Amino acid sequence: MPRTAATVRDIKPADFIAAYAEHLKKTGLIELPSWIDYAKSGFHKELSPYDPDWYFTRAAAIARKVYLRQNLGVGSLRKYFGSLNDRGAKTEHFQRAAGNNIRDILKQLEEHNVVVRADKGKGRVITSKGQKDLDLIASQVANAGAADERMAVASGSLTLGATRGDDGACLMLSGDDDFSSAYATAAKKGDVTISAKVLSEGSVRRDYGLLLRVQDWVGESFRWQPKTGYRCQVKTGRDGREDSTLALDVLGEDGSRSTLASTSAFTLEPETWYTVRASAVGDRVTCEVLVGDWVLGSAEAVDTTYSEGYFATWNFKDDAGAHWWGDLRVVDAAPVRRLLRGAR
Image (cartoon, rainbow, N blue to C red; front, side):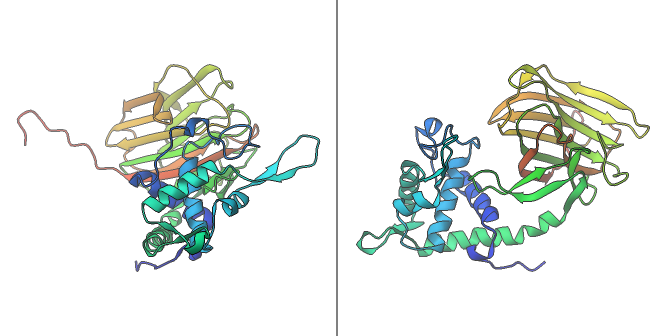
């Protein structure tokens, strides 16, 4: 397939910001300040942003803004990232965003020659190197669009490209009160690792997880689970209570369900991003749930029921609130070679 050349102006803002934020994080161009755990995006905000990567997202959004509109300073950017101050029964007023994180990000972008101070102190402008780097990320996003075409909604209702709050990330939002929602690969695969971030809105009391090697999608939607495959299921309990668990199930063609492995109880909170990750490589199936880098639960088993199938995100119906999904990754994995003693 021929590659498409694109600039920042050609890409949806949420898509570009998510990709460039990931680039800033992986390359270390933006370092988190020591006060990041205590910082808020504005004094009118009650809490810090829920997304642990919000600083990289803000940096990407600032770089994009300077690219599109030259001579922007801290004051102008504070206006751009500001929002209404919820004052209860009183009239809402617009409030500028905090300036300290914006100032720090601009300094770091300057150090790496992405932006530079304009003549006569009129804010910052994008450098030729910065423009080249941002356009390169934009081209990568444009050419990655084909990956989205290889996945489709297999059950329920999902809104793609949704955004939550002011973090600008490109997300997926479930919204079906009657059926489970699943976003699946369009073709069957064999050895794959699948991972995604997920947030339960309002309450954690709706199960979610990942589906592996599903044989087929019978009908348009399913209420609880597909007829076949493996399921990495986060069995949610009560908000803030240590009564949630992780289970790895195999779903039989006869409608049966057997638990291959499960974990001890752990605590889940609403409005918090968790990572679910699962893999099926050869006859080994694994799944785990994490908060940040901390593993809350991990389960694995050896099973030969299914060797290939569809891979998907999965969440139970949204009668108690929506599920937000982000950073979905489906990666082909090489099968593990098991050598006999003495073999080379």
